[in-house]
Image 1 (cartoon, rainbow, N blue to C red):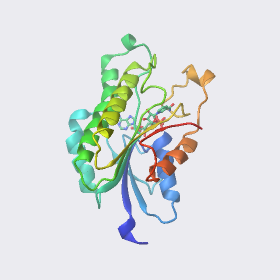
Image 2 (cartoon, helix red, strand yellow):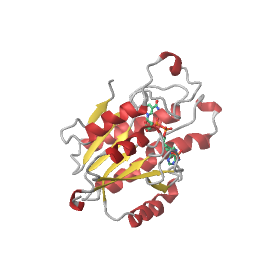
Image 3 (tube, protein in one colour):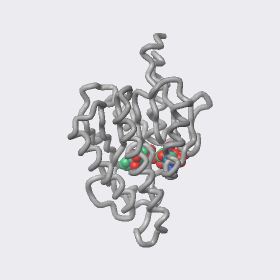
Length: 222
Ligand SMILES: NC(=O)c1ccc[n+]([C@@H]2O[C@H](COP(=O)([O-])OP(=O)(O)OC[C@H]3O[C@@H](n4cnc5c(N)ncnc54)[C@H](OP(=O)(O)O)[C@@H]3O)[C@@H](O)[C@H]2O)c1
């Protein structure tokens, strides 16, 4: 295998759901050219040979320290970053403790915004993809207000930076409902909306991210 063509990827939220589907697809690539590192709190459903770095992305003040640890831990600079970590409290805004909303703001907005700021100042990084939400990034999402607010924030940030013609390939991927742990078991949409398997959505995401002419904003349509 030609080591020169190997690519280091960082997959935030790779321990399950959509992020995990990307790790599985990287592992299937016959050339072995993709070297993904999964980042999340736990290893979750990763195989023993899949690389993992433990980081609670809701701990905002630790950002610089943790990110330096990752860079020291890697053999080479990352080429692509996929931010698929996400979550938030489910229920009426006033009924949830504010610390739960703060957790959602850190995880879905402040950490990816900090990471993107770093990425825009690194000449070696070629691509940054944030997983938004077709459901929550540009319309209300009752019972998931802090999650929706932070997805709106990243939507505005990415669209604005795209208008600044950044050196890297900055993209937004907006899926619809997926059958993962993120969607509460009692969420009403499970009865009414179409819910997709994360592996199916992941296949499209993988194809699109490797297509150099792919749109800067992909809205998932099955
Ligand atoms: N599922 C849906 O219906 C849906 C719809 C639209 C958009 N999305 C978006 O799609 C993306 C993937 O979601 P998913 O459905 O695959 O969710 P998921 O199965 O719940 O996976 C979420 C991932 O984020 C990680 N994560 C959660 N909290 C974290 C924290 N504090 N620090 C570090 N990592 C954390 C989890 O790992 P640990 O728990 O081990 O940390 C896990 O790897 C998210 O951006 C989500 O907002 C999902």
